[in-house]
Picture 1 (tube, one colour):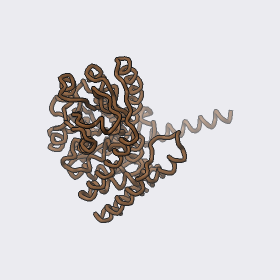
Picture 2 (tube, helix red, strand yellow):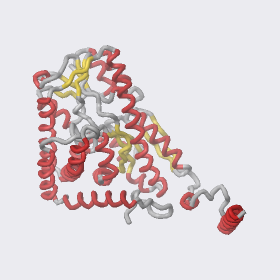
Picture 3 (cartoon, rainbow, N blue to C red):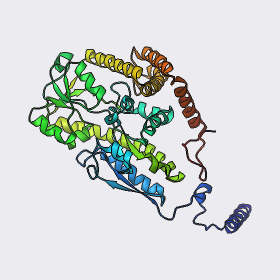
Picture 4 (tube, rainbow, N blue to C red):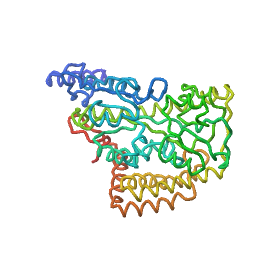
Length: 421
């Protein structure tokens, strides 16, 4: 009887509050939700994926758009378009920057000719795994630092997709040693990856995705890399290659992102801005688990099709690390933006070093002998460029916000989530 009376009294009080405030019971779900005011019409945005339908990297793009449209709940409506409808993967930056498109997906290394720092935001050879990118972006200030870079070009950017490490070069001869690389013509994307191949004696040839199959079939290329096993299978590469060179050192943590024209982004309401970041984080988790699962599935398909897997010897892997770190130092000295992001990434890796060593073999990522020395060099370069203090402040802010877990509140201006105290 006491419980019935207690809940009866509480129910009467709730009804009184609802009546007094003028809200219907259907709206009284939670205080934050009750405060969200929908616009008369949703903001309509035009989006295009960077990928043609034959390259299944479009999957996370579609997932992101569908999720935003559901969570946006009348605030925003994004029109999804297949790759090639209005733009292309290499033209997307210009089209979103100019406002010809509101939004588009990207692989940021395509933009490293504009600024070498873009090469760090995805697929750094050897050093950053999917786990590293996810942790660095969302917990260690990577998201904020990379948006400083994109904002310089009139763009807002969300890392929303990370796949498994990419397959490696698919070739028509086995490759195990540095000598085996000599004289090979290999399709390779990415400025740093191409320089690495050349440093090992091969020739790097950039070939658009739609031309890779034919180039391999005609013998114009001796091998090619493109993406993860599921994507490579969808492109028919099992039909025109006999071997896969493992491990795939060139892109162990492939990140793709969503670019939004900055003027368009600034005009969005605060609730939509909140939804965009949360959807990016959710999509990143989905994309990694999807492509990791399918990497096992399609590795088996390639084996069943007769493709053989070869493994590089330790001398090759040591050479790759040596060349990668020399490139990072060289570019950091030449470019303050590069120094800022590279120092931040290495600061994260040094922070993780002891934990990873102690937890072997039950952990993700790895450390190497020159890691701490390269970190020291990048710290000095960052100080010389005058960006050291800024990086340290961004890292400290990200760590504090995530520890405090203070959520953005409806009715306040949106800057980030979690918010600062």
